[in-house]
Image 1 (cartoon, helix red, strand yellow):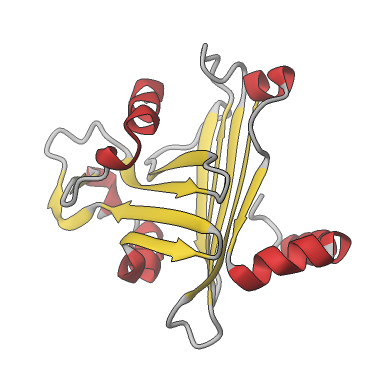
Image 2: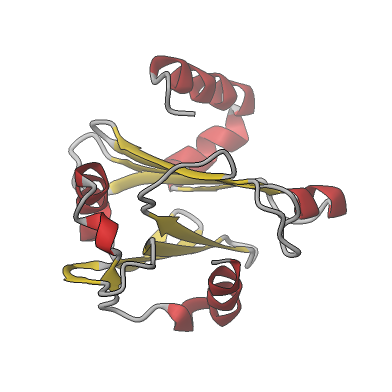
Length: 196
């Protein structure tokens, strides 16, 4: 799995090819299917504030035949300074203490969290993703995207960027009112218990 992630991040935008198959457990997971349907209209390349976003979601009409994959979508986000984050989305059939993904919807938001505690030379002893894709109030466009990432190796080397925030109004809010933004984020998680 880590090799796939590294390869896709090295290839950058050329890694995005349309029409890849969904994992077999995708059809067994109604929540995942509904969650990806929520963001499917935004597949492709688009500008979100100062970020360039490329989003690709598997084709539900084509399922993996061997059932070995849990890879369901990916997203590449490039900020205004050229910093990139590649986000793979997995739909796992099983949860464990070592690796788990959490995916859920609210009325306006698609939220994906991935935690991995498997020792890996690229990331170290842990890796964590937090992704929020939030639609506008009329649900016709994306209002903002927030991506949080941390790993043992990046923290020790003091490299990388913990958060990327995309969306003109959201970016402005974070710059002008960083404390208010943190309080709003904490409040959101308090109102959505059990999602961590």
